[in-house]
Image (cartoon, rainbow over all chains, first blue to last red; front, side, top):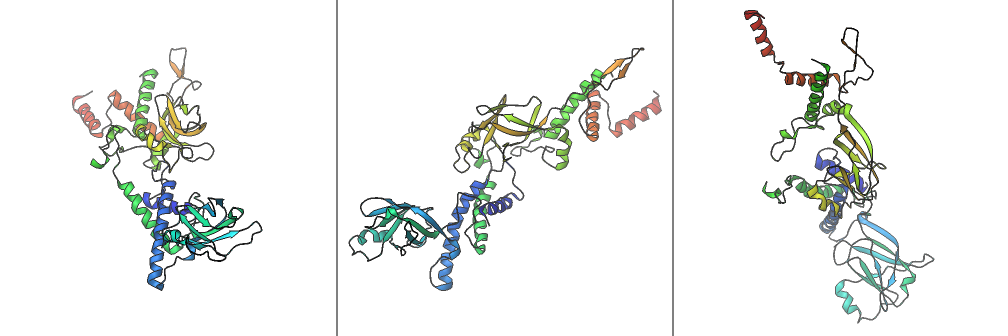
Length: 211
Length: 200
């Protein structure tokens, strides 16, 4: 199901019919709420996996692989790249599942080793792990420590992503059993917006709450 | 009744009828801006107004386009290329809509109404398709004068009403009210009884 299809379902649910041209709950607004709802259902999947299997993991359906990400130098033996989306706040750093580097011939490295922020500081005093490259991310910037010239490589990143949030025609990366949770989350807040009294008078005062 | 008076009565009555179908705002209740009868309520109401429904491609210059000459009420406003809607915005919402980061105005244009026409944002918009209800044409009973000085109907140059027949009846009823003719069954019956008892 594409984002656009889900957005239409939600809008028709909220308006009880096809929304009019002047509907204030626009597709772009619903899309913003869907991004939040995806984070919520990912977390629910995380908790349910602990309950069911005793092990915390996120179902494969939520993951996407982003390819050919450019790496730039960010100092001595430090490189950075921009993540395609802000990682979900699952665990310490489980929002990013795997990072691999590719050279110009398409040969890939082993997956890089993730660090949590607590580990970044004291890892500097540790002996380098042979043939392993360390990384961590802050917000949407990923930092990679290496003595190799990584700016000659590109990165492939596998991470939790609800699909391309900037394209309403992208397929939603959410399994069918979690779509109702997304709909429930989004409609709860949008119905609040719809039910709030409107300020119909143009008199310089904010009358809506008092009406 | 001379034809000029008939035409005047009919033309004012049809404008009243148009106002009634569009939704007289005098019927609004506080916090409930909806008339008992107004355009959009049902398909049947829309059908009554269809003889006045028109399309116009607006030429927009620096974000401004004039009203069509016979413009009465907007039905819808769309982009000419994609037919995606151009939303109507009231003046005190302009800042919120114009500066929205979720529905950026470049991809989600808006318009306001002014004294002389429409104002569009973004101002780079060059055209828009307007669907609107126009002013009904004034009817005119054209005639020639025969040898006896009587007026004889001449279809050439006459302007017929554009309404459906059922709506013409409603307009005529309004005309008769203006003249003072009562169509209430009780009044007609009382008058008939007076004629019977008291004579003409």
